[in-house]
Image (cartoon, rainbow, N blue to C red; front, side, top):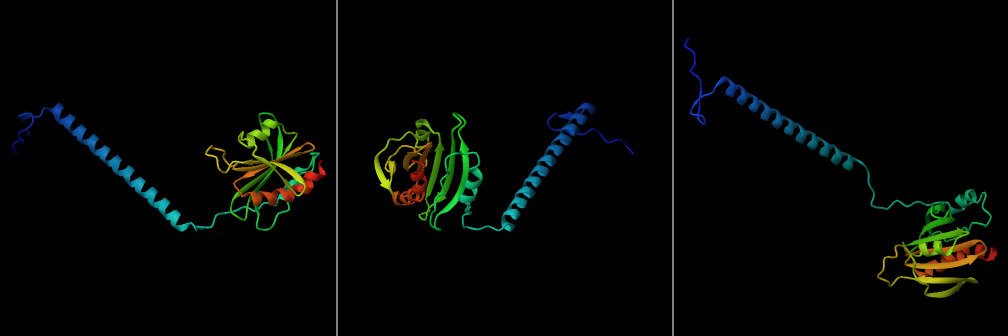
Length: 213
């Protein structure tokens, strides 16, 4: 059988040399591997997305927000060990729900504060701090360095009012605040709740405040 004549490459106008043939085949093989790798990556991506979608569909979900209900009295009893002033435990209606209760220590000056956070009946936030041996800087930081706007007496306790509800400044959660001092404790109430709800919270800790004066 007669040997096949070398293939004429149109681009070259002549037959390929053995070196050119080898280079062409190597380039074709490289491109094939690249296409295969891309197909594999796309396949893996599709499989991953499908798996995540399946998990999302299978996991039960609820539109109702998860709300913690912390036993503030129980946490306060444990936290009281080694602390001289009595830690206040607000006696609030059942419509108030606590989502946090703990001792907090500020790193800058080591001031310790007893804290409890609440979700009010109006679905707003009201936080309660009892600073132990606190200083004015600690109080000012909590209230975002805002200025007092008045004074109010609640169940025999006089509180300084910080009403920031109308300000355009970024005051975080310090939209409304109440501050009073008794003995070694500085009591700071702050949050987004209404003044009426803060009056309820202040009244709930009034016995503890009065006992420390």
